[in-house]
Length: 327
Image (cartoon, rainbow, N blue to C red; front, side):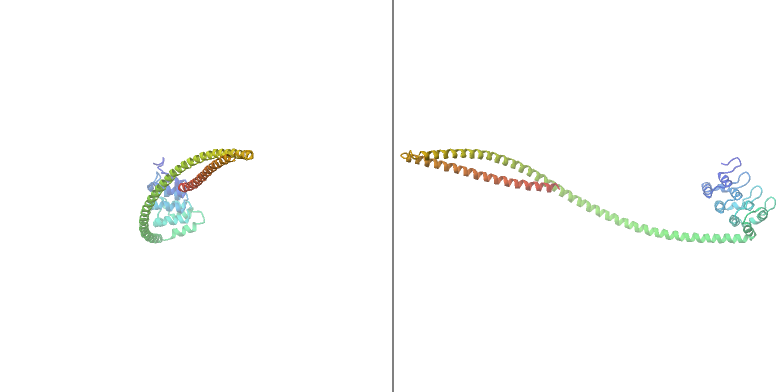
């Protein structure tokens, strides 16, 4: 939708000397805008030439509407008339001539050609170049245009060859990548199977190891209980041996006192020597009996201490095996 003079945003942008990026964006958004004229019969190309747009902007508008160079407004002015009147660069004039070679001969409502306008109104250092371009025969611009077309065709052919080559290369690369992906997939599947197998083995070994550790822990508990019982028995035996030893020691001391007393009284009781001798023999036998009991108790104590030492060694081994199992 245009303004009160039927000007579209592209018309206004060209009148405002907008940048190349703005003109490009507007023409790409609505390409037909380059072909629509306003109430003065002007298309955007007229205003671009009138406001001194550069060659890139002119080429952009011609690319969207190659017939734009043929469009005349209500004053019978072509875009090239405006370009010559408003001191357009020589490159702009040449672009318009290539698009419409015979515009050199076109006249406005006053019968003026682009050459007439240039000679009367053009001001700037490129005036001689513009006049030189306008003096060329239209066939020159036609030939130039054809050469440009041929060059573009050649470039398009080269691009098509490059694209074809790239397409073939890409196809080969895709095939190679697909083969590689297939190989990687097979390798991944094999690795997955091996991983599952190894995982199952490790889980089995772990389960077995846990069972062994559990059993060793139970054995250790039983061994600890057994050691505790043996230690309790050993403590009990030690107490009994202490009591026996104290008793024997006391009895031995008593007998020594009695023997000493008997020896002291031996002189006075020689007549009773035989009776005392018998008593002495009896006492000696009793002492031997008690000594045998003491030796037997001491031997039993040594055996118990040996058992305790063996159980301590067994406990240390079970502790070591338990720590290895936990690791």
